[in-house]
Length: 427
Length: 120
Image 1 (cartoon, rainbow over the protein chains, first blue to last red):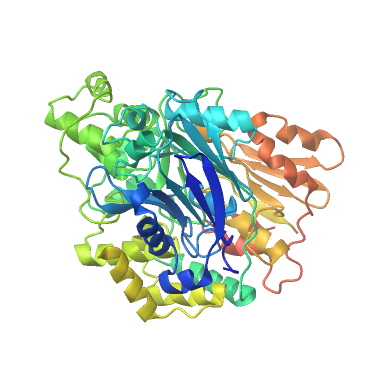
Image 2: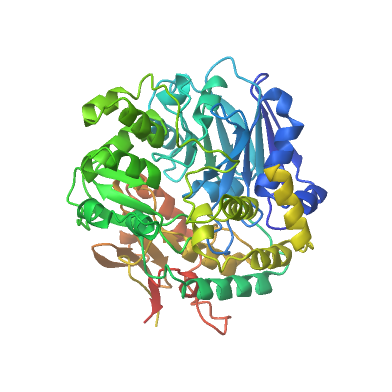
């Protein structure tokens, strides 16, 4: 695959500690587009070896607005179905720039390992020193070891290591959209984390026209209904639950995922003056809220914004899905932060908020029907568009994304191609 | 006339970096950008936008603008902390040319979704 691609798939065999790579067949791209289309095909190809597939969207890491997304595809320990979780922030693009469009991780290792993917090379490394560390410690360890603070980490904490159904694959220090228990899968495979870094170059079939279209699209998006708004508070308000007054006193800043107009993430300061502009001396002054439903889950227990975000931080350090922690705490009648924190170890129970489809319920529905929401998510997960922003921005239409895909790759995708691939991944 | 960055508007999305990289390489890459969002202090939520100009290194920090003369030795200070090691390659790159070969001006400005970049 020549354009918008690294043309490489890594095949990582944990059982035999072997790594190989293969070319990304252009015919596969023509047939399955990218993202969830190809991760699903790769999952089916390797399904006997219980694979976890990491994959980039066709447009991931480009100037297409909100092209921030990569995905994890695997069988969810919670639902028993093959599901997809979003990789956002900067980790989504780092996968592609590390030199691989897709990574197949199959089998189980007999000892703790981590996968270091950088500049077109994938290495399996011993992880004895970080097995047992929490998500934050592990991220710090790897970045210090490699001397690069921009390494992006998909990692688990004690939640995943201990086999909790709610173990989450986190992104660096923060919660992710993994609501499928993929952290448990990492733990079963003795895979502590995947570290990503690279400086690839993606070529474009028709560069000038592609970039011109991206610019026009951004210009239209900037006139849309979310123009000028920022943060998880605004997002919640748009969904009908206004938490802005509750959260605002501790908000430090709002942050976007790669090239995404609306910052869906909000950094709160818990141990520092929130309005401070200068860099703080404190090592861990706060937390980046990346998961609206985790936030709302703890709020529902009657907690303050500070206590809520402190629990989000504890959940992320432990590598647990905060939505599950909040919901099961509520069911158990636990409402005090200390009581809830103690539930992180050994958390069990059935979730009402469990996702029922293929795509993570981390992304709100925006009052769409299930079918509409699923189709829009499918489009986002194929092309590599931020799933929340895809729902906020109708300007990122299917027609426009197909047009950009064709300009970028020189291929000839059609609405029929898209319909067929969506039908395949939803079946 | 040069690029101006308002760090209070910046949402650290890296669109400027990618746009600059495209201008340099005619493909998507971050290897040659002369504008960069420093992201090395993630846990502290502290970042700046750093721009390499012909003679200056411009650092737009949340608390204010800092301009360091290139070649004075002082520019190295901006990357002395290990958290900012990622900004070091910027010193080796080509300076901003304001996308002089483009009729519609600098691409970083056009692709900033937060209107944090202007010409002034």
